[in-house]
Amino acid sequence: MTEAMSRADETTRGPMALRADAFLAAMAYERGCSPHTLRAYRRELEDFAAFAQKLLGEDATVQRLEHTHIRAYLGELYERGLSKASVARALAAIRSWCKWLARHGEIEQSPAALVATPKLPKHLPRVPTIEEMNRMVDAKAEETAAWPARDRVILELLYGCGIRNAELVGIDVKDIQWANEAILVRGKGRKERYVPLGDAAAEAVRAYLPERSQKLAAMRKDSPALLVNARGRGKGRLTTRSVGRIVKRMAVVQGLPAEVHPHTLRHAFGTHMLEEGADLRAIQELLGHERLSTTQRYTQLTVKKVEEVYDRTHPRAK
Image 1: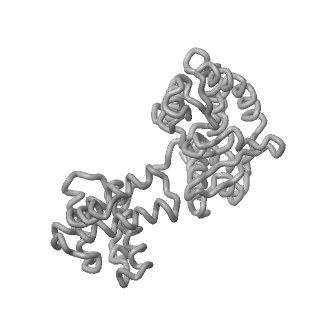
Image 2 (image 1 turned 30 degrees about the horizontal axis):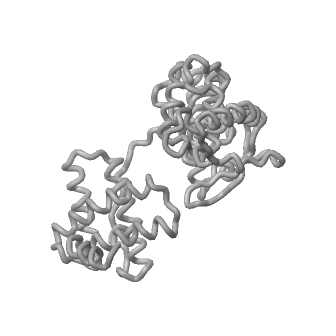
Image 3 (image 1 turned 90 degrees about the vertical axis):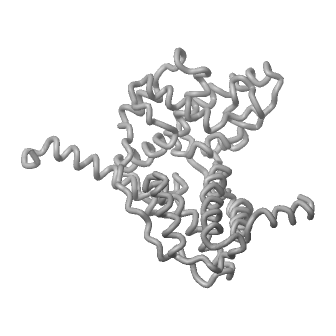
């Protein structure tokens, strides 16, 4: 960007919007946030900055922000018809920004700390049973899958390793450590971890690799990616959106709800391990959770299932 363009940008964007830009740049370069997270934060903060500048004036700086302004903004979001979950997401973005401003000495303290988060109804996600997952992963996919060998690898790695969709599509062939029976995955914030490569997943990958090589050779393409696009579009690497469509299609064919998505398989991985007696901290390591409290949500799922069994079977519960 030239100096002239930079000056022009500063004249069209107020001081508050520019500080939001600085925060987003820090998120990208210091924290290694994903493009999806950055887009979401940019959308929320640009909307809030526009509201605040309209309320306080175009030249208003972040030092003028107060908790009452944030509450007024949340009130406007409700008036627009946004759900509590959407309002909570907007507040989370504003909180992160205000914390960053306070940490860098631009404001004395975060005004967002005085704003309560909207209370959300607790909906525990419906996790497929072990039997349902085994049926889905073991099913013959020749009639429904565009590339059966590759699509089986997708299911085996999502459910067998508990990795995120973005981690899955980011795996390169060289990341598979055959000698150690592990896969190197890159999680949130560019953090790397190794996850075990189970026998079933290893078998699926070995069956797929020769087909992958043949497909790339036929398309006269080369790609480091483990999972490649069957039609060779773009750079050849499969996208998270494509993985979502593949998982949903294969789930529906097996009689599972259309709401099943790649993260459902990750939830199933953690829940089923816990049900089979795995240690919560071991599951935390495998899933790459920074906080144990995130992993403990799987305990809630398991307790809910136990309660349902009790209510259905115990004579004193009827």
